[in-house]
Image (cartoon, rainbow, N blue to C red):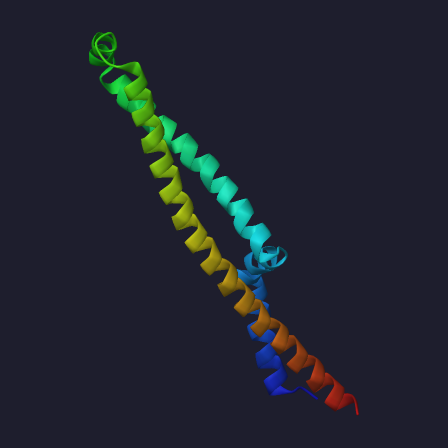
Length: 131
């Protein structure tokens, strides 16, 4: 005999598995610290690449002016300024990434907890039917 509640529950669970479930299961396979650390490392690498691309584009935009002024500027002060801006950029990007990935991890864990509770509910409905 078909149980309508069980069919609705299985449909909801199948929809979850097809959509956000794949991503949440991948996230749920990590410990919190491991997931956030991995994402922070990726963020630092991407932030570094983006920073150097932007600096390179800025230099190449006014390359002629840059080459004329390079002999008159203090290279150490210029280098220190680049490093300070780099640290500020990557540091703020890392803090933002930490907040975002902490939120995503907690959201995925809550969603998986609900999914596993639905699995238990489905299992119990089959056990009740078998008795």
